[in-house]
Image (cartoon, rainbow over all chains, first blue to last red; front, side):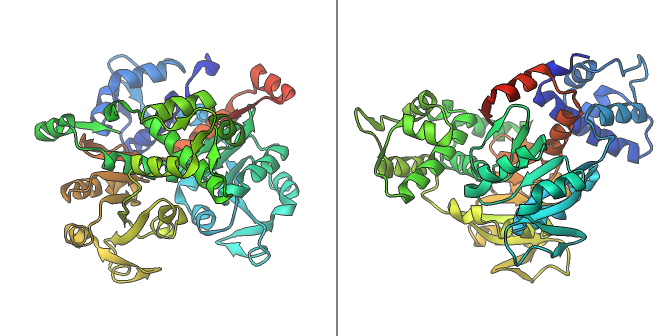
Length: 225
Length: 225
């Protein structure tokens, strides 16, 4: 396996394949072809075969993929066979909403701790997750074996929070603060920038509708985004 | 202006420049160079000049950019000079957290309505935003002049919600449901897929640390993500 040459676009697609397989498995289907997956979930069958081929030979001629077998492999490739323990920094509206986000548990992430600097919030609970003092960050992270951090603080605090996270030894960070952050290359940082996403919608709306889109509408042509 | 050739990566960077300029303006600075912006916000000065050059000549030799002037231009280019009216479909935890999201108002988006199918939720308010029956979608969208929709429903309902949105004439959609969606090409769809982002972190953690990252750590090399 040439793990280091796998792009993030590929692993993103593996995530999607896994979710599609989960759905198929829930219906009791035991084998599935790339064509069936592609047709049903609006994917590309050649792309599916190519992506999976990076990790081994999973397809069986005349059968397709064994659903359970492929799920197990994808789960392992994506590192989802071990639970990840998550902390959320910032117990504001976004941080507390994320604490409850059902997507975490669906994909084997467990929110283990919240952190804030606000004395009013420290010691309280969101569901069954306690809000700790950010001053105790390193200690709690070590004790609770936390390996993923979610930054949900205002933009101006994000860089200093990231440095605290980095010092604690956490290597995977999801950032919701709309700020450009610097990070050392041994840390994986994913920024979810809602403001930029909103502004790209705004930009689109500000453009005069062009002929392509009119033509697309007329012909009922669709695309997957 | 060759508007149609501008990529989304470029407009995403314009969003970031605008936020940087807002910060600089808040400090009372009236002119700024691309080098100063690059240094302070961890950007690339040649990239800034190139991106801005797509839209006109904003820089003045020996001066740099007039901050207020450039902010006005970027605001207009991004379509942020007019307020966008947003509806959020799905008044669950994520939908209600998004209703309160301060980023919307910061960037001239106003949440005007929530929609749900749950009788328990319909008629209630989140802050000053009413939850309407999804059955009244087309009517409320028209009456409230809503031009942006946010989909915050479970994955299995997302495609049918998107079709309802599409029929209403809304052209810009932000989707939080972890589902591959089909949409006609005259609609701009941005999917914020937290599950895939989480799984890409998990994939990273599952890889053996490679030599590059060790070297990067030792040399203190940093990158902007």
